[in-house]
Length: 438
Image (cartoon, rainbow, N blue to C red; front, side, top):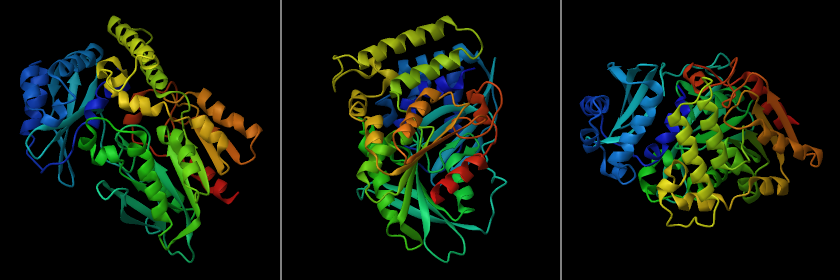
């Protein structure tokens, strides 16, 4: 089953929900999933929070379920939930046995006893374990808050090498697309936490924080700009580093992953005090093209395409044509656009030119890519790398066995790979650390 397209189908719901709420019994969540299982979408929709309803209609909920089960088969059994306590959130993971695959459904219950969000994950454990290269006692983790506007306060973590005798370099970690937490967690894996722990072994600090759309998704139900979503908070995090006594203010770096890497050069031009940039699996081709190629890739993983899958690709091609036509305006309906993302976001995205910013960049830059990455094509890496022929401040390296999250795998990559507990390759961490010393 092509899991990623299921995640993409309902990404709008994830972006539109607030995970806030008191810890509740799983009754509401269990009722919701039972209604889905019975295909009673009216009752399921009645449990959905009103803020989510502004973006999710009952028919869209029904269509989303139909698209999912066209790949997985019918839902046959729901096991008892694993409950995760995250502050005052109530999140439940239900193992769901479909005819063709076992998936986990994550359901978030709000303080109003309503469904604030749900999405499917690969089945597997949801517990993070420290990597083998972790050296407890060799680093400290301090809670910090990134605050760009006195309204959106983002929880984060400053990881410092222990026993400092002088200020150290720091790398600010910038998330990929979507409402990521500070660890950029996917399944049981935490890319940013791995990087922070590994880099501390080399005397390098890191600062990571929850993305604004993760902490305050309900604030942007009517749309958001790239600056609000990414740039403002990245600049605030960089400025914060200059005020931390343990940090060498002349050695501040920004590492952007995926979509964050695409925007890193633009941020680098604005943040004059940055010493350099690290682009981790960064794309430079248009987001809508990447989305389409990911759908296409995953539909073809089993060597055949269903009629439903072909129809979905046809719809996406039509949406992309509309997106790139002169018909696109702020009032364009969301159902005419990829992933039902508002026109305001797409129009703003068109004003950002990553290659133009990258060409103008005078700071040192390291470009890294996993060769088993199916989410950002190798052609994008080659485009970044091509600048090394004319600019001596750019270094690039790729890793044959690594995927989009710089974790090792074998064979044809797929979303199921992310279900297995893994860690960022230490080879990548070593490459970053050595580059800082160059």
